[in-house]
Length: 118
Image (cartoon, rainbow, N blue to C red; front, side):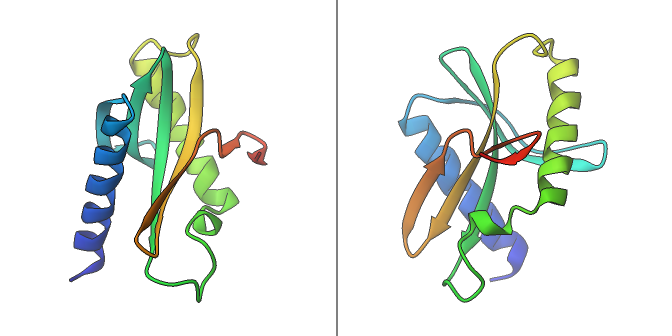
């Protein structure tokens, strides 16, 4: 299976995980400006921009460790574009990471902000 197919399956699993927890999926795989948003989801008045990371094993660290400062900056930029286009700049926004690793899913709510990992 190629990397794109693996990524799509990981994002499908992440969306199912979020839906099971009461999130509405607003968008997937958006390219805005210089960044990309894997999942935009909403629950309880909070819009979450969710980066999905999959790792087969731990040889290269945890999936969340693959979210570099450059990747965070690109997500923040894309999220700002999305929020502006959808009138969300004054509403609560959050940046999450969903890790898929060793057959488990871990949702890290509020994983990072404009300063980096929290």
